Image (cartoon, one colour):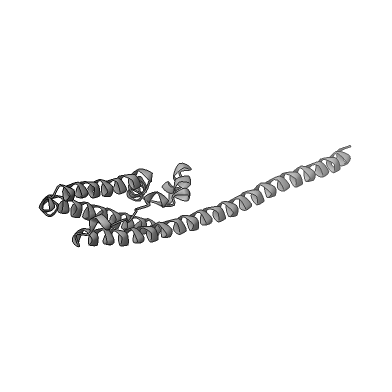
Length: 188
């Protein structure tokens, strides 16, 4: 009986060890596949983020060109004929937002980078777009009122310097946003 018991025991033990090793191997394979899959997803997300940042940098460059046109119209006393539009809400932030919401940006960027991204997308929004374009329209309306009332000197003395300050403000802000997006892109 002891020899028969040993045969059953060794066969059972062998089967248990085989099942155990099969389960361990299956778990290891699943972990390896999941690791590779997550790395691919992460790499694709970062590639998408860089693409998005590059697109927004290009948009900011176009807006900086528009700022130059705005400045030239003011300096040439031709402000009423300026019809530029800053479509700041066309900035793309889908990937940035989804990574931020999922908490994945925290693994890739520093606190300062995340704060800068928040500042950038606060301005590159429908609210920023409305603000800058309303600002321009209000100054144009005020200029038209001054010119219709025969107060041309008031344009030169007060309104033109105010408009120039607004141009400088937006140029500085857009350049800072461009630098912030470039810094984030380089940090990834």
